[in-house]
Image (tube, rainbow, N blue to C red; front, side):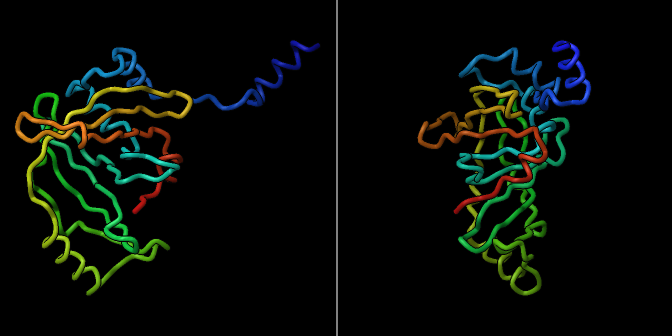
Length: 197
């Protein structure tokens, strides 16, 4: 009788939800160990599959985040989101080049793609948006940087993969500039993330 009850419960979906990484991502993480650099082909797959890349995640907030819109050949286009100041959240579209196991900024930033909103969700439009775009152009650092990624861990239960981003200037990198990035594959969890100042 007990065994039959268990089978009925399972058939009704009462055994609890199953969490797992997408098959192509699980295949990738099984080939890595901690502190191993992520190969370009695997990086492209991670970009395409993840719902959001959350940098320096803390209590459901990101220092900044990326959503990859298009990945193909040796380039990728993504939308970066972050707080411009305490009162304005911004999103802008940029293109990067995939060069070996590194990704490099191209300087191709689509300023006209800049969208912004107040913390309550109200969109910034009209003259306020025009002025914000001008401020963005005047204050954005145009120095070209390159990055690579080091595999750290994966959590099928949380549907996440964690990497360390290293920043390169020429052939030099500094651990002080490293950032931990959590890749979220669950759409609901990714959508719940916010940005912090």
